[in-house]
Amino acid sequence: RRIAEADSVAVIGLGRFGTSLALELMASGTEVLGIDSDEAIVQSLNGELTQVVRADSTRLDVLQQLAIGEFDRVVVAIGSDITASILTSSLLLQLAVPVIWAKAIDERHGAVLEQLGVHKVVYPEKDMGRRVAHLVRGAAADYLEIDRGYAIVKTVAPEHLHGITLTEGEVRAIHGVTVAAYRPANGEWRNAEADTVLHDGDTLLVVGPTAKVEKFAQLR
Ligand code: ADP
Image: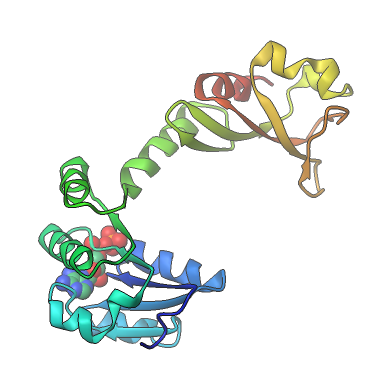
C-alpha cells in the first residue's frame, strides 16, 4: 500500500485527457498515481504527479502489484485503444474498486463500459462538442449543461436590467431564469441577491432550463 490513502486517485492512461485530469487533481491537492504503458509519457510526467509508473493495465498481476485494488477511485483514461480500456475496466471491477470512472470515445464504447458495470462513464469529446455548439450558435460567453435540459451560462447583463434590482426586473417571472452571480466590470464575482442592482458591463451567471438561459443570453 503506497499512496492509496484516503484522498488519492489512480489515473490509468496519460494521454491528453488523462494528463490534464491528473494535473488538475494534483493542483487541487489530491494525490495521484499515474499509469501509462508509454515510457516517454511516464518520463515527461515524472515529478509532476505523486507517482508515475510505466505499466500495462490490461494485466491483473500488474494491477495487483500496484495495489490498485486499494484505491477508492480509479480513472480509466484510455480512449483510442478500446480493447485496453475494456480489459482494464473489467479487471478493476474484478478487483472491486469502489468507484471506477472511464472515458468513452463514443456511444458504443460507452455502452460496453456501462454494461460491464463501470460506475461513471464520461464522454469528454461528445460533451465538449455539445458545449461548444451552444457557444458557437448563441451569445453566451460560457455554457455548461448541468443535466439534460438544465444549464448555466455566463453572459452580459441586458440593458433593460441596468440600474434596477433583480426583483424589480422580475427576471424569474419574465425570463424563467435565476441570476446566481454577477461580476462588475473590473470587479470580483459576487452572489446575486434580490436587491442586487445590475449595471452596464456586468457579467452574469444565469441558471435555468437550457432553452430559457439561451434565450436570456441573446438579450443585449
Ligand atoms: P487522449 O485522446 O486523451 O490523448 P488516448 O486514448 O489517445 O487519449 O491515450 C491513452 C493513453 O493510454 C496513451 O498514453 C497510452 O499510452 C495509454 N495506454 C493505452 N493502453 C494502455 C495500457 N494497456 N496500459 C497502460 N496505458 C495504456
